[in-house]
Length: 308
Image 1 (cartoon, rainbow, N blue to C red):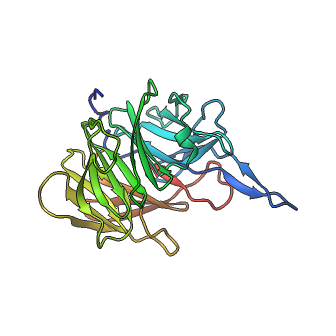
Image 2 (cartoon, rainbow, N blue to C red):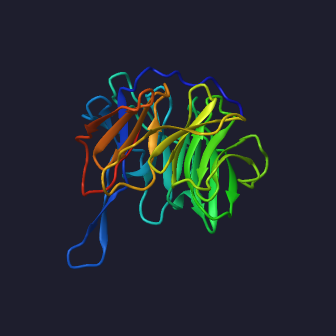
Image 3 (cartoon, one colour):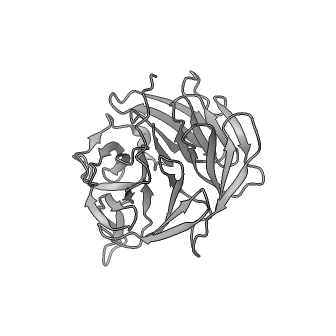
């Protein structure tokens, strides 16, 4: 697959996009639940304030809990819920310089593999391809899809464990993965096989690591940043020195044992959420700034997911 130039980083992120699954509300006097749709939203990165709701493609009443961002902080990929026992849909949205979203552009589909919940979603830095992971019977499938044509190719593994994180290299020639019970590694999209681990190169074994979470490339493509429990570590993407701990997140009581984060296009600012609190970590000094995510549709106490 051809790659084009990455979308340019625009400096520190100005916008955060949040999403979550539809909210299940019990039906009085019944064991049934009704699904309350929730639309994704744009927030001010500095204050957490609500800026705009993001429109959804036709036939998609609600957002889902996976999303990804290009380094320009304007181009976002999201998943949409089409209803019980029906496929998820993938779509792209572009923000203008004031954070107003344009019309969603649906990725051609649907894809029967997306009936399963997405484990993670990654947008290539040129905005032309999506990588995503879904659970399969006994393992995991990683797929790449062209956002314009819907052309898709798959890798599968029956190794126990699930993909926790996916990330594209800046040049689009590798995809980083974190896989529980295996570790941190990279796969080559040019590999013509279908066996995920046969196409993968292990960089950081999982032995002795806490639960693996998100992964990202540094802007130069030379290193991977990933979450091991609540520690943020960095390791060379090729042969080189071992991993180093950059900083440790300090999530509140009740937070997940693994960390899902979004690294901005400059590679300096990392964002993770717990409920309605956004925690921004400056990786140059480890300092953390916390903002309250406000506004938008907020039924129930469900978890938010974010990208910038």
